[in-house]
Length: 409
Picture 1 (tube, rainbow, N blue to C red):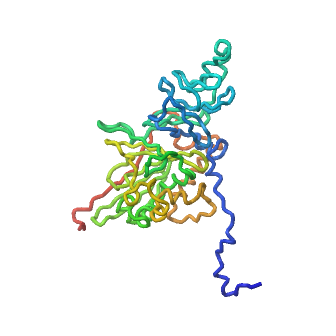
Picture 2 (cartoon, helix red, strand yellow; picture 1 turned 180 degrees about the vertical axis):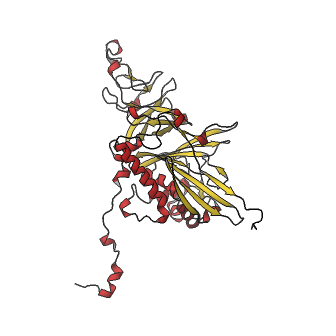
């Protein structure tokens, strides 16, 4: 058998033949009921639909690994129920929505938005014991043009948070929402479920270095020319998450502190990607559909519609219009995040100093997962309205050059 000369052995080091089997971090990836992260995520409210799209026509939705039916009764109340009718198991997706709730197509049992059985038409007196029947349900509330669901222990239900940048609208302002699935594109996709793990999308929020490479110097200018400047970065833990300061010095003498926010459990507040000055104006939720899919919901404070118009990625095309070859030549967030696989293999990662924000966010998340497992309440959960206002620090904050400084155009 032919052998490799001893002086050539170094050429073989790092061979993929010796590559060890890789695996995800099980603490972080599960979202189903009973998993560590799944129980943690169930302690918060999550968007489940755009309010204007929740109508009297039932729709199947999926959140945290559970299939559910979402509808609005004829009195205008949204409801979120377990889909299999408690009577004989037929899906309420085929039910008929009425004034007081949804009626099963099979034997007509009528359920309110809170699962109370109101009528059993095939039973004596409309169901003499119907008050003991309860279809499994989850609480929902509407805010900022979205419908939010709480899927955790009923006795631990917190108040639905408010966000200061979406409050106290001035005359002419309104909240525009989007549930297309993926931040930055807002294409009219048929299926808003993005096919990879939610955390691969959310932790991207505390990675300012990828903006310089992926969005400015590898694929060309995707957002703004200023991102070509490699920033100096500081990471800072805040009350319920992590922010970063990305400092840039411009040729005209101005400097900018770009603050971006990732807040527990899955919230982002990204400043204007055109680098326009001022506070951020929108909030995003990176919602876990299941272990291998997520959906993005976004609410923005604005004065004119079109805040979430499809973003032109390359050659005047939106992301959906790009060919596979164009996505290879001009990759963006979807390609970089989805390219990690449906669930990234954490054991293969080699985190470096530029990944400090990722490490900080994961450690914070794991600490809250442990807190929930021990019976405590995670950060960002409040049970009184006066405590539930979240203050957002995100924005592009500029400093003009001092009067004696020389600037260049």
